[in-house]
View 1 (cartoon, rainbow, N blue to C red):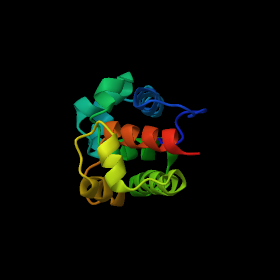
View 2 (cartoon, one colour):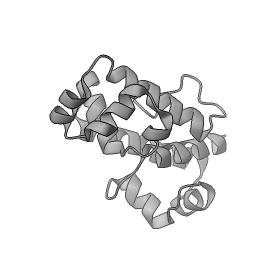
View 3 (spheres, rainbow, N blue to C red):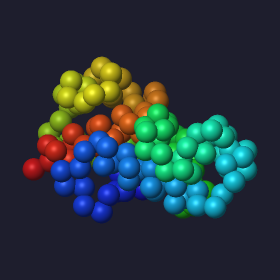
View 4 (cartoon, one colour):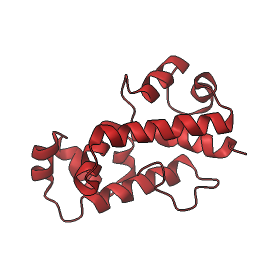
Length: 144
């Protein structure tokens, strides 16, 4: 479920994670008509088409909420529960890796402040899959 998209995440890069997210979303959309999925989920049709193609570069700009809406169709779990579980998983792993939001903001490529990282992980502002991949890769790198 995104946070466990890689079977062996040890030393995973943000790109590895994005490619795994893209593959997971493409599998969830396998054979689905992007227009139909867009109508059902409220996710823009061009975003659905990019996810269906498994395009990691396009998936980097997809918001976690939109990805969760797609996964809801495949997994039968409400989108908000999926998004919450992903955010909670990252926060719990931050504790293990002894990372705070300011350190994450300083260490990742995403142009976010510590406050913005915190708000994204709390679900109060947008979190793209590219930002999630950056955060998750740092957490993996720092986990003992």
